[in-house]
Length: 553
Image 1 (cartoon, rainbow, N blue to C red):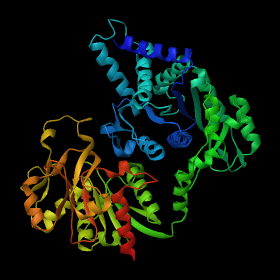
Image 2: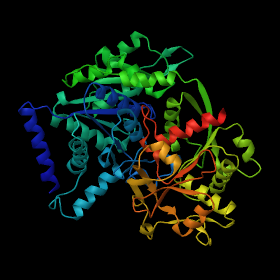
Image 3: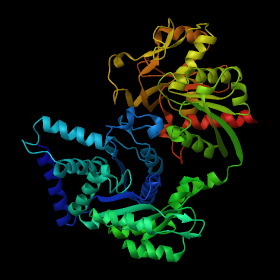
Image 4: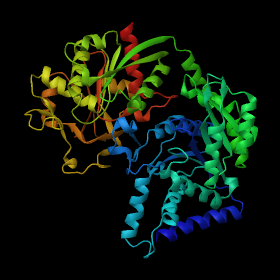
């Protein structure tokens, strides 16, 4: 069944090629020499540039790790888990894609080795391979290719940009590299473009750039059947022309196809910098696409707002994973977006809540203009988060709690306003008599891994901050949680002054709380950071930073 479906897809591709019909173009971004070069930013920037040329773009990330998805991985290992509208737990690079191309991605936007083998083995158990010996080629590679083709089909995209995680030479990446090699053969080289992002080291002692690591990386890629069309050279300073010419010659690309990718102070400057080298035009030429006129007006307006910031506010980001800033990547980016719309540079102080005590919190939060407590799981650092909510409430300091940040604010209020000294979440203390936060009924006995309340759900807006922020009665936000506000304590908490600010449409699930006595104090059960964009900050983040600016005076 699976093989028949696959060959139907391929026959349609061949037919579209033969009749000359415009078909989806495929761009693959690989990385060489070292990891962490910014393949995701390169892919996202190209997506934005092609969108500005009038093309519909879809993006995806193929990750070589064997986990089914990053949902059960430690934030210290992987950074944040980005959640799509349809509930997929994905790599954080998908956040970059959404923020740059301003398109909502889906479950076809992230594939791992674990998911590939999970699908293949389930099909084998179900008899879908009709008794064949299951092998890496063709069964694993076909699974990968079907996934690549599906993202274009489901999004009706003109261009699909696929980032291959890891570094060329990694053993776990080889099935993905073989799959994209086959894609190029199936769709035709005029419909496929390979971009290789690679480090060009600079040796300060001899004051020279070294191209040899890139040459070796490209040689490795060529040995796997792929010749890159464009070399994206990651450098911290401009390369001399002779170095670029040398790379072009030995990597078998045209000189104009060796493009500098410089380190920039603001990552949203990257599309403009790359387009100065005619990046998207070169890609269009390679793919035999009409380059069309590029319109960067709105993107440049956003960059002008960034440049025009004339205020500074200091925000304490109080969490348990602050040693790895990528664990809160979307939160940090959302704060920056909100700063753009308030003409404010947002300086983040990363506060480890595990280290906070009653004696140290005043010193840690001194000089801050707002506190944000993001999501997380487990009881480590919880008491520090509760102290943050208490400090913000008692000092009328702007407070924004997200998911766990909302839950700890409710716990703090129950302890110190209602007088329930043992108030807690059943996640942290199941024996408490006052579990103001409790496990959702549909999460009872559920195993870990892709089983939380995930994805977009509607919310009815009630509270004043919510109304001012959204300007709408009904909204939709993305979720990732197992625990919720316990309705058994709803009347007591509201009577004490904390108001329910948002609920599910049926009124049963508390989605947001506010403290009207404070100038700005809000907690939300969902994750608004996943929907913020540099050109359009999330409304609650926007109002939070506005309140911080006002607090500073």
